[in-house]
Length: 98
Length: 420
Image (tube, rainbow over all chains, first blue to last red; front, top):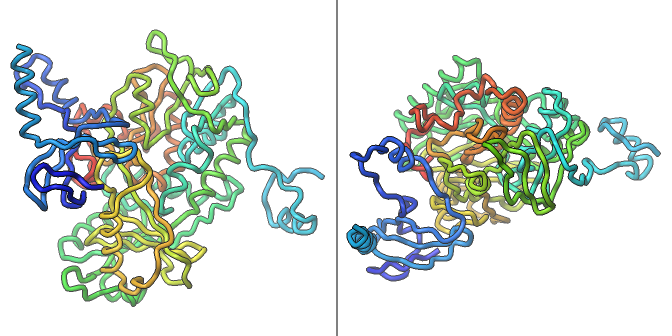
């Protein structure tokens, strides 16, 4: 499995370390349902069989956090973006929604 | 000629005389009935053991096991066959020791040769701190009546003189030995439980995949499968590796991630290692099969996966661990490697519990320790399904323990499944 790092190019997956599902967002601690939301944040996982957005850290490279879209059924990597870019996009989308 | 129902020295002798013509299949090819009292989803070791103990110990008669592949095609045939009960935490110790005791009587109980071999499991330590941790673990085991011996370097050397004791970074200082641990022929466990369950009237339905659950007013009434609807008063899920997918069809969200674990076997060599040895400084465990192959493994690959294969960096890492521990395997050729999908739970411990759906029971989250647990998992899950209450040695394996803060985190890694 090789990950196409936007800064470093194609690199073997042993240069990266894995955190998990990138779609999980830290809930608002002031929200009325914060207790339940933090349980789901901490422990429940969608555990997708198919294309999944994941956080990988390029530990032996540029030290960037990446959002990798990867098919968990066959390890095919469909897309790689910097996590910063994804976070900014999400922020923008949330801003327009409000 | 009558079919031979029990295996014994006499039946083997008799069959030798009549040209091996009297053996019947070990279990029937069952066609599903419209309704069952209990349907177990998943015909792996745990599902078959559950059906067996339900019929044998809890007197349930109308049972089916539904398996998407064939018996032995999943993780029960993909592990490294090690059994042990060297756990530390209160929730785990009595459960795994119950399993160990069931292993010890399994072959007589099933009338099946599962090649249970109590050849000893030796966990090596490589630092003072690790020695202290192992001493603590061994003491916890002994307080629960489980055998454990802390060996020093010389005692380990007398068992395995050819290990690399003077590795510059990780010299072997000693080991924690559980003599009652060992290996069991994994396929034979599946076959033995399947045969035992079949003899007690359990229908084993292979090549039938569950596609949905029929739930009305919060109660289960059956399962949808690729062979049609099967009615059931109670349904038990024993589908570790695919737990999230299957439970998801019943609307459940689980504290589990699926990860791939690779295992390896070398070409057959002469008798070389007569027990199970684990490397404490990396992650490498090895035993030798009766065919002569070295059977070994290490860490999970570390990323979510439903593909039953892994990647080369972990192969390299496992083999480096092997070479650091026993340099003389360097010229042995690797014969095969394969992968299995593990239910990695959020605290590294399993779940055997009811679910919010009435009549639907869950067994999973075995991480990569499922094989050794097979008999006790079956017994406790059968108890739960039959009595609707947890077996006394599985009370800690609750589904809601993450919500209430009662995690059983043997490695102390927190909610990061790929680190357990």
